[in-house]
Image (cartoon, rainbow, N blue to C red; front, side, top):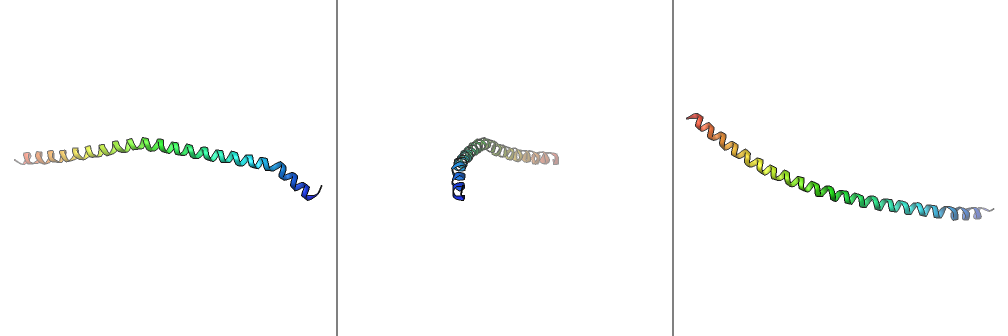
Length: 81
């Protein structure tokens, strides 16, 4: 058996295996990317509601703090009289 025959035999045997491995790896990468996109959308959707709630809480706390400051000033004026 010559070197050319051995090389041809090697290519005949290993080419389908390498192609199959490449195909499996390609499918794995596509599946991983789709799962990553799905999880990202799910997390962004969930975090959007959390962020919106925190912004509303911030506004209400700011209003409450300003009201409490006014009440404290009013009580200080009453205590001074």
